[in-house]
Image 1 (cartoon, rainbow, N blue to C red):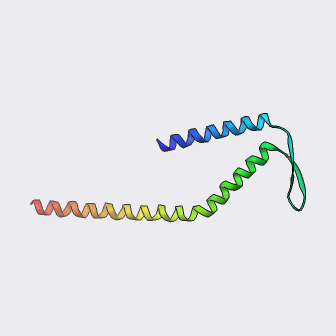
Image 2: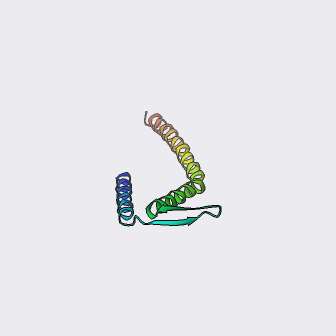
Image 3: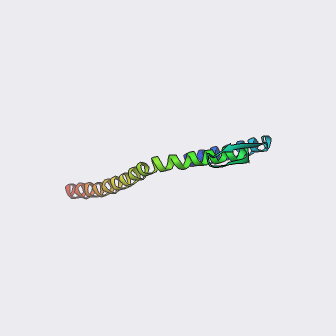
Length: 94
């Protein structure tokens, strides 16, 4: 359910971005400190959002990965201990 919600949210964001770019085609001059360039406003906003996403993944990605590994390890431990508990219960009922 969460995955479907994220897909719908992504599609809405793409549609909104496409609509924004279509209705704002005027070029914008950006000074990059070394040189300046002229790009459509939609392209610059898309680049800024992409850069923000990549920066967030760079900062939050390692912590997210560590938590996923920890959860996987704990799930395996829980499964192993649950099997052991079931076998002990089976021994006690005999």
